[in-house]
Length: 410
Image 1: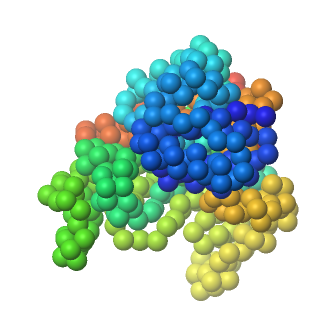
Image 2: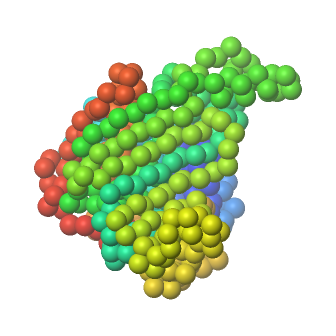
């Protein structure tokens, strides 16, 4: 039985608690914590409604860790608190599973890595998209050589968050002040995590530089005006200038010669997409249309292919029998219902298994630090007109010695 303490009980924390953790028989929710007492009580209620013993409730994560002494702490707070909670937990004997986000400085990341190395405690960066069905299918195909030599990948966090951001003060959500005060690639890991695993980042390859540019910031202003005309604008958002650019484009270069393009797109009207794309010398994979194009299989000329483009849509399903990992072939309705179509369950299951068995976590502190560093470096690059920024090697020179991980991060 793995005893868990949860720090942060907003939408994400309560969702994972209800949909994922309480679906696991080998997990005990021993403590819950949030700075807001009503959220603490909501967390306790979720646990008892599931027929489990009531956890201890706290409003200070340090008191929770010192008193409940959980085996592991799961962090669901606002971005700015992730690192300090993770460091305190590891220094006090608890493993850490940290939800994704950005950080404010490179110093935070260096302290995080140093603490993990010094304490020897497990730290997992809980990037659920590393378990996405499409991402794992494409990674399996790439490892089998179907796309040839990979030269470029791209991805996006394309998600209309205008309402969430604008009503952030009322809803006690951390994004409001981040968008008000900063301009950067603030959420790179949903796309960069799966890309990094396919390219072997920190395991035979590494990111060496970051370049970012940002568009003007107009989306939230226009949305606020629309809400104001409708009589729905919260006072906390009135006359607020948001610094965050509507579209942030980031280019990463890798030691292996590959390039990666990331796009943050959260303050203009749009549908959700991650745009996970693989480009190689023999073909491509495109997530938005779930399309595979292989030169040896589809030898039509460019114009013939263009005319029959619709014939390729969703044809990646034809490769699932041979290349889709078993966890997705055998997925159950219960797992599919456990948050983000199953990705959440697979991610948290891997963490719980590692803590229980005392094994290495599949998405470690070097991965988390590298991916979050993109946020800080992008902010500097944007401020300097797109000047390239060097990516530190958080592995201390071991990146080319670390073995490439399995297709499935488990």
